[in-house]
Length: 132
Image 1 (tube, rainbow, N blue to C red):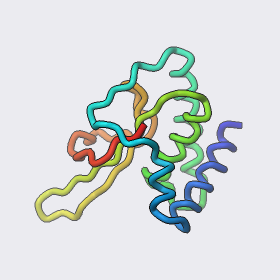
Image 2 (cartoon, helix red, strand yellow):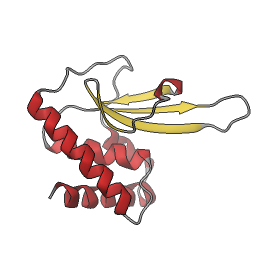
Image 3 (cartoon, rainbow, N blue to C red):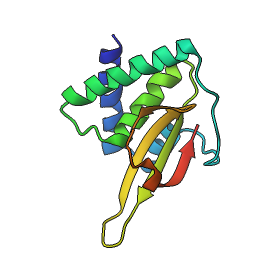
Image 4 (spheres, helix red, strand yellow):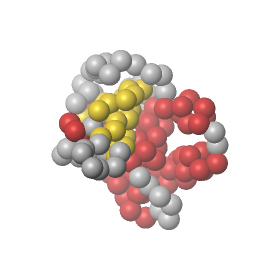
């Protein structure tokens, strides 16, 4: 059932990103907090729920016909995790090297557990926004 929920929520997120204004997107991101804001580590039950959500999102993003980039995944994860009462931070960062174009990335974290957007080079992104 979590897979079906992830597909439906992801579809709703894509509609919002494609057709609604930026102010709606900002409200979905949550409350802006300081970049250094830390959440406590998730308990064992919360960690199991986060892992199940991560697996459902990974499956969902493989099979949906719409663009499922990192921002869509992060917003979908935010909604799924929030519905279960687990705190989650959403990060938005940008990176540019000499001669390269500006690259953006979004990822979600609960404590030290990365729910969506894991990359080995996350450190190269300058965090421009952190949302609770």
